[in-house]
Length: 463
Ligand code: UTP
Image (tube, helix red, strand yellow):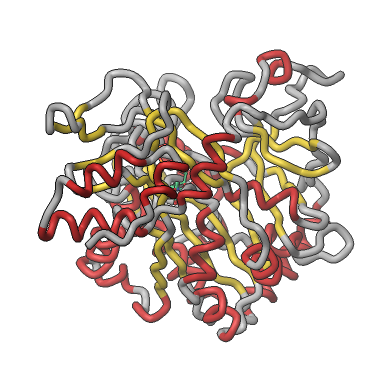
């Protein structure tokens, strides 16, 4: 017997869902009812009816960036951050619940082979860093990995298959984010993924907050003495998972409240598709590239540099107390994205692959936490050292560009250790290089390794 209130569904414009339920029986009906029970119809109605009422906001201004050019500031931050790590007060948080549709990889994105020589997966590369820092600081670093209901099982299975990459399994914490239904872009009706299933999508990386709290992980971390979370995305193998200088700045009272500190990289060009940091209505925020006028993107300062050049590389440190405060608040706002979503067509009884964007997905973004923080900080990072995301199957931000950047960084670190290289036509090292993250997370770590004096053209070198 159906326990859903038809008037509530009708008021929300979703009566088609109950009509579908009427057509199902047995297991299919049970399955569909479980999906229906997950819907928050009043929230969806609010989101749909608020659709075209964009808020008027003031023109953005560029943010103040911390540039780490002052050696003394750097050294002080380094020792503060190292002490924090040695006290075991930091955990890592990787958001890995996305669908990775642009990459088109059959599996969770973190399982994608990204090491230039080893073909190590993204997850393996992050695990190597955590292993390295655990040894260095003599403290366990809990690793929290956010999955979605769509990739949770395969993610956990991958870790089990690889014996958690040598990490103690009790220190790797998986938690699952929520989902939102995709709706038809014209009618707002919830789409079906199959005859007996709603088309759900993960609720965005902003879903981290609710998922951390609901899973009980936030309390677990607190009970383990963790005070700060080093947050990064699953797609950037060059990220510094635990950067002591960054952590040291984050906890420096005179510049930061210890609530949130973010890293920025200079945009390559005005049209690079990356969100930028800006100040709007007096608050630090991230402006999405799709929301920025061309004029704003291209505006330059007196030195001829882009005014809005501080690209968001999605690397943050969050204070646990701040996350606690946020998870007890009203939550982050939903954004709408018009996308192609395959859907079950009732009239033909088949799943259709749309050729044009047909659906609205609702997602929350973690960077919407920034305006809610007291004295958030943005620190400028060096792209060549820390940022080479794998977003696309080819072209920009693909595995090819990322592996070239990983190799180039390896060459720089090896050259600093005295290794000489045969040069390619454009001055780049002609050897193919990889430094395992479990070997070195900074150039100084190479002092412990046996290195060749010279690497000739075409040689492969893995350390
Ligand atoms: P992206 O914005 O690159 O999205 O996510 P995506 O889903 O990985 O890829 P596309 O857009 O479908 O090609 C940035 C980071 O946020 C995580 C992703 O796993 C990635 O680490 N993410 C994104 C989540 O954890 N959950 C989400 O709901 C969305």
